[in-house]
Image 1 (cartoon, chains in turn cyan, red, blue, purple):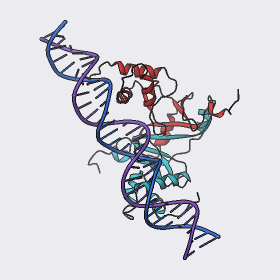
Image 2 (spheres, protein in one colour):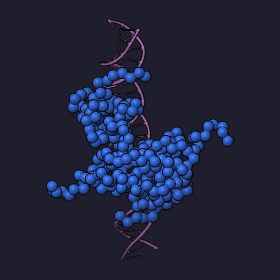
Image 3 (spheres, rainbow over the protein chains, first blue to last red):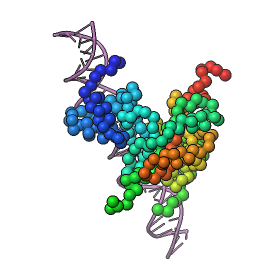
Image 4 (cartoon, chains in turn red, green, blue, orange):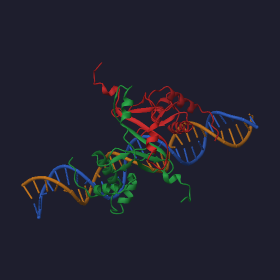
Length: 131
Length: 131
DNA sequence: TAATAAAATAGTAATGATTCCTGATTTTCA
DNA sequence: TGAAAATCAGGAATCATTACTATTTTATTA
């Protein structure tokens, strides 16, 4: 079970760290392939899952049927554009206090929450040809 | 495009209304099949999507890779058990004010939010054999 | 009520994201 | 260096969901 170094894993992590958006496995694959044309899609998936499991990256699910990945593991919220599908970070305070609200009338143990916002992003909002 | 009556659609909606939990398409399928053994899985998916599109039911995505459906379309929040995977309703106030927080430092237009909570449900929390 | 157009169905094939499998290659460390 | 363990490439398999098509239902209208 001991983790061993892998060139591929390093490339995947490095690529993810260069991106402010939150690429999908397939986007990671096509990009990393430009440096290493032999890397396989399975390797990308396996390493993204591994990195997420050990907490070096985080997996983002925003209901579009595809997992996104983020090299920034600090807690923060995301916005999904319903027009272009882009996923971007939001600058806002943490909302952990809502867990208390949720637990008030509940007999289980709430460990955390998942929140994301949706709407039209700044780019899609601008009409065509507006400078 | 006019909607026509369909026995299958009625059965699906009726079944969903009897459930407090939030069944997946496959659960709907196996249950409705007890009344109508000829119904096809495609018909279940098509009608669930149609009913969700016209707002008669709602589609719930809680990151487990499977869509859940809910006959209660009023806005409310869900809890997902990380142990047994069950999805249940939470009794708590609406959190729409967080959309304002999210929009404060953002140049797009935020239309809404998706929030769900996770942890251990009341059933899974109880040790075996405890009465 | 019969004819007819539109919508819906059953059954099956196709899709797309992701995971699994296998034999070959790397990494690690004694 | 040598060998065990981890990782890889490539491809097959899985699983939820959607698409396709010939047939059946529903609704409308003569």
